[in-house]
Image (tube, rainbow, N blue to C red; front, side):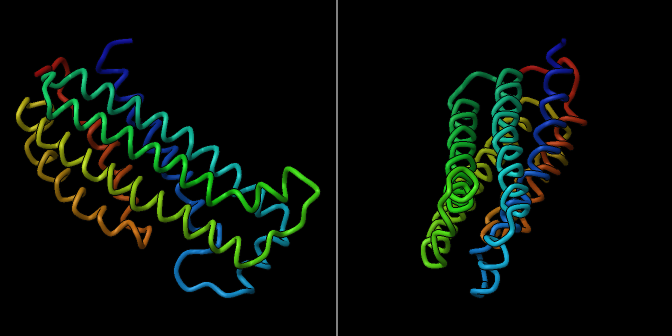
Length: 204
């Protein structure tokens, strides 16, 4: 498989898996305006808990695919502090997604993997807030910075068209709004577009 093909495959996988796995942020109650009924409805349903666990597994796969994508991009850029920082920060972001998702899914995991009942609304809410905080702040903010750094480096090294580099910086700014979850979906859009428009054979 050529480097162009590896980059494109990693981009498609990362974009698709993230788009699906990120739904766990919406499914597990605890963010925004929630009521006690939201928690009891969710944790009384074995099916919802199981689906949320599957979504977390998909998000975990997405994190690995994002690491692969950024690794492939770095290999096509000039090997300097800018490209190295972009990959390191992307790794931090993927770690945030993984750990945050685990915290978010923990109360459901207690029920699914043991004979214990619902841990209670205060505990479930605490884990949800902690998990979302790590996912959306540590995870998405780090990925936003990595997106901006890669966009700057890609423009410098002519890896992608100039308009896509500029769009990447704009998307990185939009991702700051990920604490309300929806702007996070511009990230897989950027990854997919980057993979489709990367210039064949280009290397810094």
